[in-house]
Image (cartoon, rainbow, N blue to C red):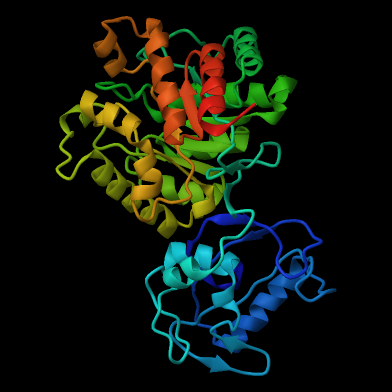
Length: 432
C-alpha cells in the first residue's frame, strides 16, 4: 500500500482467526490499518484490488480461501454507495474478526450507519465469544514460531544474554568477540540448555556505564552475528537479537543475520533508530527507560504509580514507533526492570505485570519481555553482592514473570532458568 502512496499510519495487532462462513480452510490472519490517502473511495478500491492481484489473489469461492483480502471498512465518517462498493462495510458489525482489531484503533467511535449511536467496542462485546479466541500474533522469522501472547498454554521463551563486553555488570569479559571457538561453544551450550533467542550486546547499559562508541560496538557484534549465522548449524532455528540503541549498529546487525532489534531506550537515544527499525521490517523490543544509563538512577519519580506511569510512557513510544512505520504486530514491550527504577518499583512490576497486559488501555495484545536476571534489587534482598551468584533470587523473579504473563525472559543462567520457566509454565499455563 505504501508503494502505491497509501500511507499506513497505524495498525492493529495481527490476529490468527478461525475461518467464518466457509469453515473448511486454514486459519486467517486479520488486521485493520488506518491509512492516509488522497484517493477517492473507488480509486482506493481499484488500487487495493490491483495489490491483491499482484499478490496472487484468485477468487474461486466467495468467502473461501484466498492469499490476501483488502476491504475498505470506513472512509472517515462518509457514507458511500455504489454497485461496486458500500462504505461503511455492510457486514462489519457482525464480524468479530473485524471489530476486534478495529477496537484496538478506534474503540470508542461510533459507526456512521444511519440511526447507530453505539460504539464499536460495545458492538464487539455484544457478539457471542468466538471459539477459538483469536490470537494476537507476533512474527520473528520464518524459522521461528510466532508468539501468541494471549494463548494461555504458550511456553515462555528463554532469551540467553551474550555480552561481548569487558564491563557488563555480571559477566563482563566472559565472552570474547574474537575467540570464535569459544563463541561457538557458548552458543551451542545456550541452545542445548533451552535458549530459543540469543541477545547479543556490544556495550554495557548498566547503571552509570559510559558509551564505547559506534565503531567499537560494531567491531564486537557484527563478526559474532555473522559467525553464528554461517558457522553454527544448530542456530538455524533460533532467533538472534541485537541489543543496541544505535541505529547503524541495528541496521548492520540485521544485515548480518539478526532477527530482532532490542533497544533499551525504545528509540529515544538515537533519532534514527525508529525509522531504521521500520526500514528493516524486523521485530523490535521497546523497553522503558528514562534518561541515559549514566543518569537514569536519578529519574525514578512515578507520581501516578509505577504501572500507570510506565504504561503511559510505553504508549508514547508505541505511538512514536507507529509514526515511524513500525507495525504493531512487530513490537514486543519490556517494562525495563532496573532502568530508572528503584527496588520497590522493580518488585511492583514483578508483582503486577499482568496489569500492564490488561489494565492499561492500549497495551492489550503485545508480547512482554522481562529481564530480571541477576539485577541489583535481588542482591539487596538476599545480601548476595556478587551478581553472578544471584541465580536463586533470579529463579524467583523468573517464576513471577511467568505468573504475570511474560512471553520472554532474558537470563544469564540459561539451563537453570529454562528449568524454572518450564515448571512455572506447568503451574500457571498448564504446560506439559
